[in-house]
Length: 158
Image (cartoon, rainbow, N blue to C red; front, top):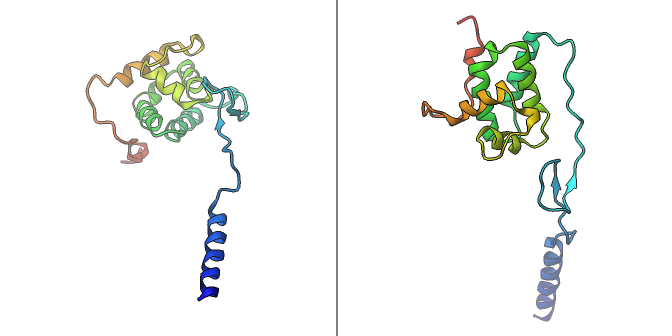
């Protein structure tokens, strides 16, 4: 009886100790942006650079992909639907603006807040394409936008 009680206490203390976290403080990570907490660690991101010598066809395909594969679902839906509607008709200068808007900011929430006018758009991103994105985000036709578009529209053979 005594040995069973001792064994149970030893087993309980071993299990309890093994379930405790090994580190007592949690380190939070953040990106470049307007982080209100001064103790957030900044993860260095490479600066955005415009791709020289890229054909318009390749740029459109890259921007379509980058519009669909975002860090957050809200931007994935918003930008992929925007790209589906406008990307093929954009001029070269508009494509450059769009490339900068979606790839230079390090925080996807900034793009979302600018598009929905929750925060003012910085002057460097102001322009025709940002105005188009802001109007698109207003969804005046009350379209149901719950998911990114299917990829069938890319198949030109049908």
